[in-house]
Length: 344
Image (cartoon, rainbow, N blue to C red; front, side):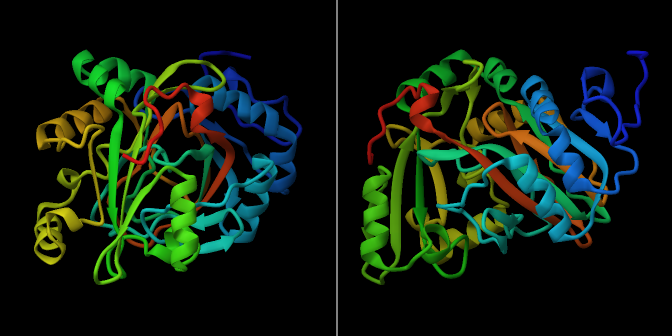
């Protein structure tokens, strides 16, 4: 096989995907073209180990050609690849549930990007693998871009990294029924006792407001080690969930409506100090310098190592439907956290 070929059509009878089967282009995630596949779920079952090896090597892979245009077909493939799907808890935005462990993309205004982040990186247990199946590609934009977490970490100023390693990062949330996920959507219940039990078990400080609204705080490590490779990764949602990443008009509206302390979500340094707009801009600039993107095509599937690789959702026009599967639950305690888990 010629290693210089940019494309290799992979049929169901071909040998397992290897590095030679991939399109490797600067600025793009690795792409694997399958050719015609009559039974996508069976194909996924046969190539599960090989695809996971590709993700272990590169951090992500975009699979093109499976024709995943319906939720049931995509669900069959995702389940074969996942082994065991995980249920989302502590969501920051609402989703539609297709089946247990299978969701729509987070409901987020299409004209506003979802900046680079690692899914559920503020939880004590989070998915090690993310799977995205594009049932309908948008007319314009809407790519799920990726960024290598070790490369991002290496590019950040050492003094900033050292502070986050010492202090961690703090996520504050104020739940309401208008913006972001509701209490019931985030915790799976709106029963106060059950919510409080969950918070205590997961190192989340909580406070019920006079109007019945819930506010929470949780401190987590910003840098972790990959549980398999041991590589240090910039692993958090510091920039994405920070107030300065919001559209300025949206930020102004939310502050007017709920007050500076009542924003649906915000991030701080682990000692509680505010994170300035300059730091957030720096983080997003470093992410952009290390971003790889490929426009979705209807039927595509993308696999992402959620610890090694951050992902984003770019603004888009037109209809966009992407099914999301989360798998391979990983405990923060198994990733060499740099700060003690406390309720801050």
